[in-house]
Image 1 (cartoon, helix red, strand yellow):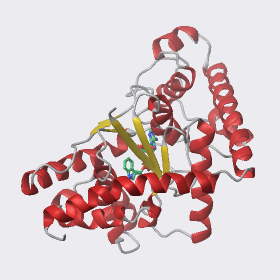
Image 2 (tube, protein in one colour; image 1 turned 30 degrees about the vertical axis):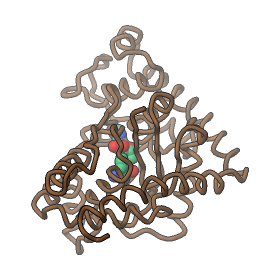
Image 3 (cartoon, helix red, strand yellow; image 1 turned 90 degrees about the horizontal axis):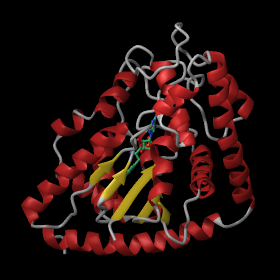
Image 4 (cartoon, protein in one colour; image 1 turned 90 degrees about the vertical axis):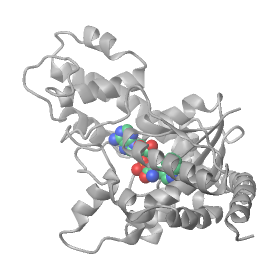
Length: 327
Ligand code: TYM
């Protein structure tokens, strides 16, 4: 059985972008692949984060994974920091990468552009992709389901794996990124040219665990053009196209079908339909999250997951140590 792996970092609150771009794929593939899904908590340290907030985000993330339907009987669910091999292989990957290739990463450029006016750039942001490569290569993962913004990091992982294999002989599986056909890049509702993200504007971002009255309000005031025609055209109608994408991902209907269905309906009616679907889905999710957080299953699941992941990671790191002469 081919192996699949992915993770989300517990910074800020989870967004609808995380759900559509990543989590829905995990659920879809969990029966087809041997799957590992983790909480990328070491990655959350690349920008300053309060310890209490990190703990809360971690609990929310594992609860959301479970509430969305990831089955811990099938999927290895774990916390990155519980498996120390990630940091160790991360260091080795950093030693096998070049400053040039890391500084070309789009996310690094975007994040540092935002910081550089008023402060220093944390080294963690720079070497972030080498840790991500370690996350993937430790487990011989064949496929990596991610949203579009993370594809470049998986491509770098491929380069690092190939470089290592060429230098030290065949050691790592070269992974392939998988992005969803619809919803690989959900845009901000207030600025549809930009990605919806945890760090983008509050108004433009739908959070999975927020008050649904606020969710509805954000959708109803989503930025659109003014010709009142429901049509998919990312270039000229990014706002409406984004809402069509969200609706298509959540209902399973194709964009063409939705365009037909809402022909002549007007933006108000269309937005209300999007708000109904999003709010129904999130209401159910929030109900399950609450149930999970009130139970005491989380610790056990993470403990079991860490055991399974550690077993695989230990074997791989030991092989790497032998190849490079540390063992
Ligand atoms: P993170 O935490 O920023 O995002 C988690 C996942 O959500 C996807 N995503 C989106 N997809 C569509 N539209 C959006 N607006 C949107 N926003 C976020 C991301 O593409 C991602 O798939 N570096 C990773 C975490 C990570 C990882 C890994 C992933 C660490 N190690 C190994 C895969 C394999 C990150 O920061 O994702």
